[in-house]
Length: 399
Figure: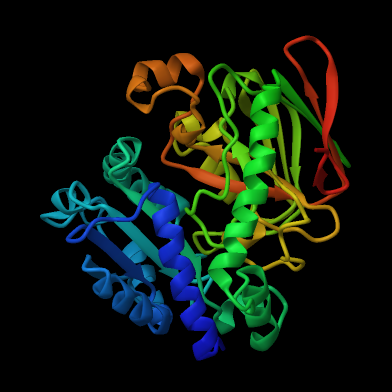
């Protein structure tokens, strides 16, 4: 498991991540939600103390146990699945920050739950997420997320717990003399690539790999973003494209655990921006249920690339937070079905109302599911001048 030294470093990194995600440090008296899985309590305690020392107002919420989560979906009536406790909206409307700590003690406990029941609860939570999105757009709120090792996750990834813990330590720079300083260096390096991409301002991307040939239209008023503090670790550089301009075939060779279901060998065909064929070697029925969750679930909300020079993740981790940042030998790209990120809008956040989002092709959905490809690939940008340029090859950006 993580040592006291690692936990201390992790806590400091999470505070840095919260500050970075918000764009500035929370002020004294600001309210910060600390939401944690029970198995992450050791890190939660250290973060709680740091929040108090900064004169913030931490509000602690514990996620349900594995048994409770299963019973919620298996036994809950529709009204229970869609219920919001009194005061929830008021709390979210007053938050200035949130730190989420995940330490799943099971990845398959929901496998016997009908996917539509999970979708019902997910759709009911969307208005709550919209409250936080609106606060974030106004720069009143920032959030971050981290994960701690558990035996269930190590087993799902095919590792013992020590090896799995080592991957987290390595990925999050917890073994550095100064973990926060290490993250600041990565932040600066990723920033240089983002500026290069945004200056280039390509019109479309063509992604070619084994079994995959996908065209992604970036759309108008877009910018590349990444390492914003929202996730630790985070090495991806991504944008939310115009979903209407996605066409071709996308393949996800990396396994994906979602809502207690294991999905592998995903192949998606896109026509005029929508999934017209969804196949999987394993978990195909669940994949199709997610794509049918709502109108936007069959459309793209994000396209991302990870440079292997920054990411020290070189193994499947059975968790999207790490797997979408996989470095390995060839880096990765991932595509997310569902909701888009409005932080990819290059204009003023206040100008991006629902009508403007729709006109620009920003997707909206209760779903956001990252599907990862780790195979060798070439990504070619077609510039607005008509010229083409390879921007990513051999797992690295070409700048």
